[in-house]
Image (cartoon, rainbow, N blue to C red; front, side, top):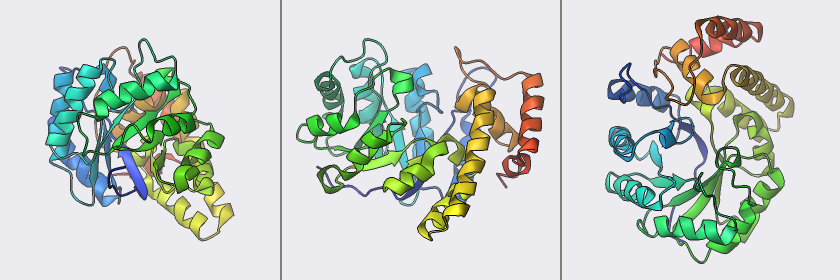
Length: 309
């Protein structure tokens, strides 16, 4: 395995801001990045699910990478999702990400004509990872999006001697048994990043040190407080903070999910990321009002609207 440093802390899977003409809104990204840095986030994960990367062209994804690469610092890392149905597209995106200084690339399995075996999935990852042999690669395990439901422990066993730059997994799935086995595989060799905001406390109890979650864009302070409470053995406080997260995510789920509702929450917090790209829908004015009332009922409204300075 290549040399790399495991992530300890939180990374934001950033939204892609679009203009009214459906172009990338580059102008707001420097402010967006600065806000994340002030919130002590460890970096940005761009062009993943929250970033609508799979709904964008290769040219657009490279342009988005170029903009975010300017915001990268040694303390604020850049992870670029480069997965695509065509491994040729993914190779181009990986090489481009490496060339502009990305700290790591990440990829889902293909969402069309999915691999039927772990061996096939490893072959797909390898042909992409081999184009950037000195760049850390994270597999993005999110079966609800990809339809690829293999246990990740089987992927690590198959890939460990075949893909030297595979360093970890962005683990966005509820199979905590499998996740724990990945955490402990080969004496903890791989970096397993927790991908579900609403169960971060469960991940901490299993040994998770780093996470990538949509609401970290807005309120990472809540999760850092949870991590501190857990580390200080204040279990009750940690549980109460996780419940706040669960309450927020239940509202997000009710109003279109992490991207549709998430972009609206960002707008409420004064960073307008614009519309969602088709086939995603956009939240209605009536739903916005209902969501705001739901947030107030849960004592979450002020937390969201005061998220950014």
